[in-house]
Image (cartoon, rainbow, N blue to C red; front, top):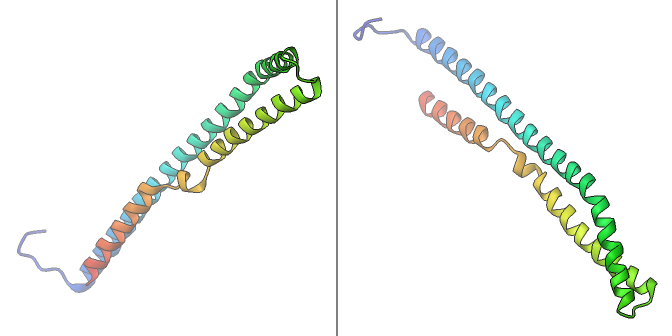
Length: 130
């Protein structure tokens, strides 16, 4: 089409619809890709947490037993020594679990790039219609 040719309103409208449809398709593909990336990220995080927990449990049990024995050697009664070590381990475990859960929050897994791009595209489309 030459530079000096004029297009009719229906042609312009048809072209606009085709471009918006194409843009929507592209943005949908971007959203899918980003969501898949976030799902893989979350899956990898969960796998690392589980793998670490499986490897750490036996070592932690032995270390906790050693701490109880050390407290008993320092003159604590065995029940008190076990309560001190168990309570401390519980608090530390709770803190670590809460940090892990924080990594899986929806806000961290939201496809921010796609949302920003869709908002930008919507603003552009609104400006084109005006």
